[in-house]
Image 1 (cartoon, rainbow, N blue to C red):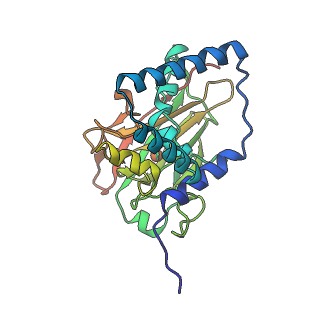
Image 2: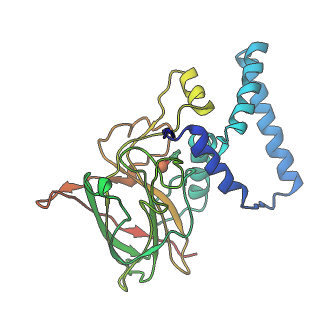
Length: 284
Ligand code: MBD
Ligand code: FE
């Protein structure tokens, strides 16, 4: 007999960790800069310990918890939920971008999702298609409003049960479910039909869940679409879109909501929700 468990934090965390490990990254940080950053991190940490007179018991719990996060493969999850928004914010404001606002990537992006035409329906199962549908249309443009033909919109989102394909072992979700690379038409236009997103509960049965529970928090993100919009000669934008008035909009566990990234779709006579939203790309 086989039992199908809901994907644990460990399952989705390990998948995120395994994918990340295949990338070999380098940041070209010179030693002087590394030293300044390390000194400031350790000073800040020391300051917190002294300010709150952290006990030995608390220090040992921290040590155990750090080990557990690693063994559970949850560093991509924990870091993207609690730290990435600072990195995203400081980078996109430093350059003074004028195009569409960015937001965090999160742990569940997979590059090279299958290409889809400018008018398309995202890969969905019957059960996804029987939930609320969102028809998302618009145009990718330059700063002056010129449409960008052949731009790529990579979109990914969770299903109505709260799972991302390729991060839900044992749930029998097709590899590219709710993932795709939409290519705009020669005017930069697109019309994408997808599942209307629902709030998402981050995996909470592992050390990240324990962390949240320890301060009486909640593990929810508001309903969101993930997007990376790119075109040659332009700055690619990684962002997310949210739904005005939706649950957890004001208390996203990942602190990644921005007022510029709000949708307000209207239900049409066809029973589907409709939303126009354009993306503006800065020159590279
Ligand atoms: C997600 O789906 C997500 O978007 C983020 C930021 C963190 C964990 C899961
Ligand atoms: Fe997400």
